[in-house]
Image 1 (cartoon, rainbow, N blue to C red):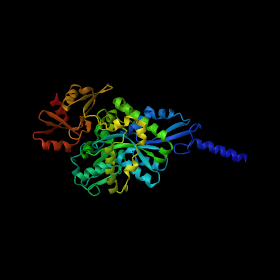
Image 2: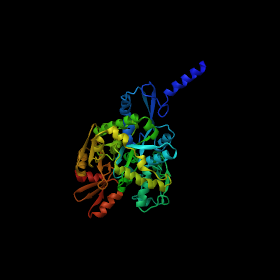
Image 3: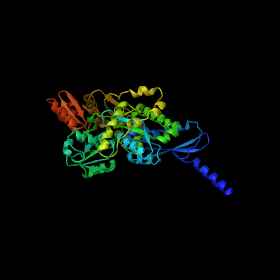
Image 4: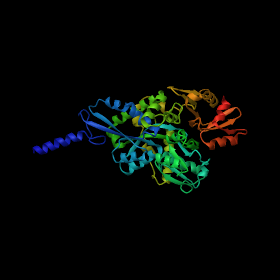
Length: 448
C-alpha cells in the first residue's frame, strides 16, 4: 500500500509538469505549463508571431503577467515551411503556429480530417495585390515571360502560397500548370540551389527567397505576384482544444503579437536588423519586405478581403487534389484577437496600407529617407552613390516594392519609371509611344 501511494504521488507530480496540451493544470496550483509555438524564421512576414516576437520576449512577459499561479515556458520551434507545423499541430504537439494562406487552408483541412480542428486567429503580414510571391529565373536566363515557361522545369513548394501564385499566373498566361511545365516540389533552399546549378529553369517562392536571391545577384524577376491583384497573407492558427482550454494564454499571445506589430511599424529599420541578426538574412532583404513602405503590411486583424481571398484559394488546392472543401467561415475565429486588441480592433480592421513610396537607406544610418517620385530617388542615389546601402522603389503598375538597382527602368519623356518584372515594363512601353527600357545606369544619369 505504501509503495502504491508513493507511485501515485510521483505520477501526480509528473502530470503537473506536463507541457502545452498535456495535463490541464488548475490556476494557483504552482504547476508548470509549456506552450509550444511553431514558426518559420526565414518566412519573414510571420515575424510578429515568430522571429521578432521571440527576440522581443513579449509573449513571455504577457504570460508572466497573467497572475494565475502557473509558471509558463515557451517552446519556440522553427520550421522551413508550414507543412511540418501542421503535422505537429494535428498530432497535438504544437499549440500555435504561423504560415501562409495556402498552408493555412491545408492546416484547416488536416485538422478537421484528423479530429484536431484548428482556427485562424490573426494575420501577420499581407499584401493586398499578392506581391509576397514571385517567380524568378537565373540572372543570365533568356526567359522573359511566363508563356516561355512551357516545357520548362519550375521549382516551387507544392501547397504553398507561391505554388498558388504559380498556378494562377500560368492559367492567366494560357498554360496548363499540370501539363505545360514540369513542376519540381522542393523546399525553398533546395529550389534556390537548383536555380543556381541550372537544374531548374525558374523558381516560384514566397518571401524572402525571391528578394534574397535577387539581392545576391543569383536571380532576376520573371513575374510579380501582384499582377494577379489578389490578396495574399500569412496568419496565426491555433488548435481548437488548446484555445478553449487556455483562452487567456492565446489572448496573451495575440496581445504580444500586437505589441510586436507596433514595434515593427514604429521601428522598421531596427526591427529589420533584429530579424536579420536572428535569421542570418541580409537586413536589406528583410527591409524590402518588412520596411515602412515594404511589400508587406503588418496588421493582426482578420480583414474581410483576406478571408474572401482565402475562399478563392480553396478551389486552387482542390484542383491539385491537396484538399477537399474547406469551411473557411468555420475556420476563421476572430473572437480572441478582438478581445486582445480591444477598442482598437475596428480601427485597425479598416486601416489601409501605407501609400507606396521609394526609400533610400544610407550606410551607417538608423533610418531611411522617403521620396515622392522615382526621379527624386534616383537623383539622391546619384549624389550618394558610395554611401547607399539599399534603395527601394514601388513598381509603377503593381506597387510592389523592389530594389532600385534590380528593377526594370523605363524612360517615358521626362519620366523615369521602375518595374519589378520585364512583362509589366514591356506592357507599359507597348502602350506608351516613345517610352523605352533603359539600364539602371542610364536612369541614374538621366535623373542627375
